[in-house]
Image (cartoon, rainbow, N blue to C red; front, side):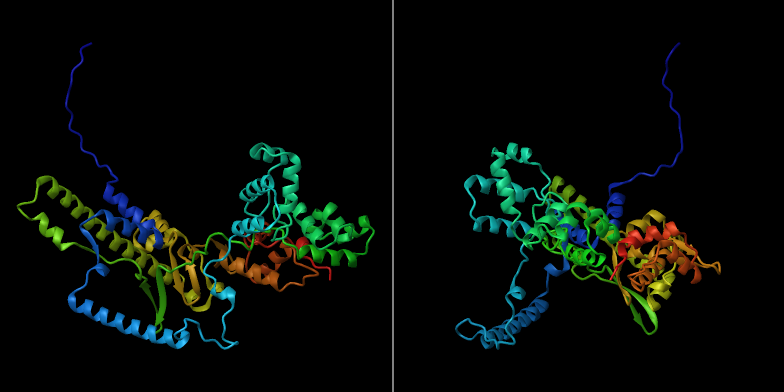
Length: 461
């Protein structure tokens, strides 16, 4: 059989993800902080880009310099009034700030523990083991490694390791370096001098019953009254099950809204928050160099590529902002009642509703609403907050699942703590209010809200 080559003409369409399209999609899903970082990187790598804030005309520069001079003079006068010539601030006793309020950085857990390690009497080997223990605590402040593993890692004997663990467990916060929850509570009970008491025995053998508040069983098995068990349980409840909870080694991250929804003349208006986002423009000097006849071919080609990249970035950023604004306006239209009256009027909403309204694909709406925050008259929310599944009412209408969660939380807050409501009882109460919901759905929403079951919410006294 002979082989031969033939040419065939075929017409077809194909969607290709060009680098420019990939960049536009990437910009669309970036958060505010990520967008700032991305623009900063582009400013550093692309010579055709510059920020409006980095170039000033002479008149503008003079005006700003004058304002700086006046501000500096005002600050210096205020400084002298406050501190005087001796650099010592003048304070009345009532006005003097506390030491804590003047601290610049909160102390982290590891710094706090290492400081105690240095201040206590440890041998060289114990100090080495102590550093290893502190460095291997989990996020709760527990030390989960067994003694042989520590011996192997540090080259120390079991006696040294056990002695060091005992010493570290005396550090602040109480319960640090415990092996587990029971060990953590024992350490705190020992510090409170409660060994060989009802509290100690409950920790030792009835933690599960304590969790379910089965005080009758505990009282029967330990030979105590229910009143005594309840008092001992209150002491245990006031202990800290996670010693590392109050220590954060990283500063908190604050949310800055990407967009504002404000009410003006009876209408909700969407306003983009473009503060701290650099305003980009093309560098004129490099543009003139591109058209210069003396420019080399390689350099001119490089500048030409940078010029096209800069143009596309400017277009992509503008498109991102326009899309964000358009999507938010659509959400405002759907959730107008929520903006006026609050959570109880939040409507069911899915991505397709907004996508059909603005003429975009659902995936685009998903990217736009990810990690974007909006400030409204009802508070600051992530855009995804407004998308909720619907739960039917008895009249055939629907209510947002988030509104139902809020209603469940309100019902539980108002319940009698001695007779907490079961999930079935809550479902019946919602049914009376016209919301059809199953018991298992109530349980699901309750767990999402971080609320424990009724048997663990019960208070005997």
